[in-house]
Amino acid sequence: DGGITQSPKYLFRKEGQNVTLSCEQNLNHDAMYWYRQDPGQGLRLIYYSQIVNDFQKGDIAEGYSVSREKKESFPLTVTSAQKNPTAFYLCASNAEYSNQPQHFGDGTRLSIL
Amino acid sequence: GEDVEQSLFLSVREGDSSVINCTYTDSSSTYLYWYKQEPGAGLQLLTYIFSNMDMKQDQRLTVLLNKKDKHLSLRIADTQTGDSAIYFCAESWSGGYQKVTFGTGTKLQVIP
Image (cartoon, rainbow over all chains, first blue to last red; front, top):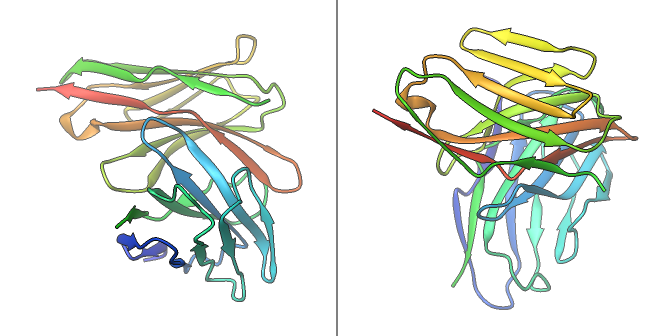
């Protein structure tokens, strides 16, 4: 079955450490997105990519980095510069960069040790 | 800026209809979506409506769009305990990429 796979499901970060969240899709979608979800809030866009080797900052990109070396993969790195990283992170993709609904993975919950 | 508002909480009895409401601010929206999120999971697309439509029905789900008032609603008929979740309204428009703004979500509690 096609879908979006995020791993790990739970992740813990120590102070000063960078961590990378994985997102893989086999839907042959061009566009991929990373969102952050905090309790009682909607989703906020971190980064998005419309095509391989290209990505753009979203609304809250500071303290995060991404890469898009393959169409299927869009990993997110939470750097030590992100001072409040505890949140639920969601990866999404869609077939075109406009109008098609975004489909989501099951998320990664990041906590601070 | 763009804003999507939803009430935070709704409680209904099993078998009743649920109506979840949403207001949005951007009149240039192209699509409006309803997503469902169960605890610890991602968002599941339930249904969506193009902005030039007034209504869409899909089995137990009915979406109503009032463009004049920028009001969107999701009606769930014969609500079941499995419908308990957070429901997100979202709007999108094309601006070089698909920019989507999500509401804060409405937590639906179904009482047996």
